[in-house]
Image (cartoon, rainbow, N blue to C red; front, side, top):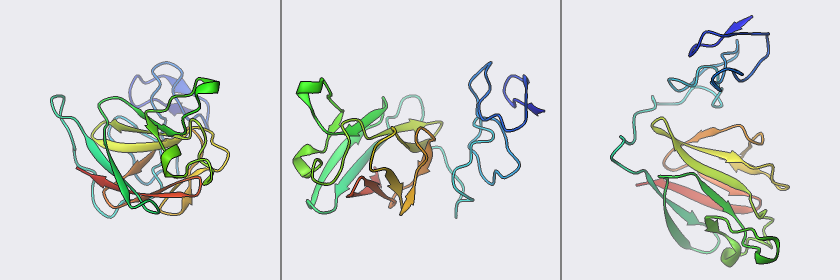
Length: 166
């Protein structure tokens, strides 16, 4: 049995998320997890500890450098931000539209990935895109958040994006 570190509910082995409070549950293979996210594997131990990036009164901002287009976008992460392609016919309006940077040609889905600030860190998650989301060359599992840091490279389909935390 696995005990939730947040609400102490009991769950069967190999459970990932507490059905009572939604906290990620610990596993035997976890090497690193954020406080309050016990058990969510973030892809191995970081080279440096995660530090608080924002308080309640500060907003986290990132700059997305679109590598092939040599352009940058500045984005606030006060709310989760969807990256994708605009498609008015399908009523799809992502927060960050990558169409103008060759999104269609580079395999960017309409709702491809989501960036958000979470407990002092920045996470990205793939939204079950066809061509995948990658962090530093490693493909993400859909809907499983991955911590990203300043200098990491995201790949949205075949579009390379360098991340700068402001």
